[in-house]
Image: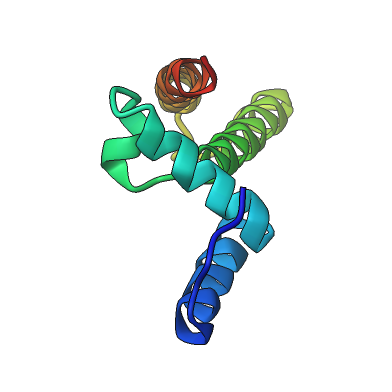
Length: 111
């Protein structure tokens, strides 16, 4: 498959690809596939599968940081004034739910 673009269009695609962490060819493939699968949820959001995957990785990193913080504070003798371990556990649960929803969308987008 070949795609013809003007120099300006190619610059726009290259910039969008860089923002998504993809090559221009990979980005074009993601967008074309999303458009071809009109029923796929990511097609209507403007977000590529790669962009959603990056968000998922960021959520995992945030979750890991919260779990580590909770472990450290829980291990401190006598606790830390003003620190609520239950609030941290609840935040981790909310992150887990968000990651699961995103993971479901990524699975559907890959199907």
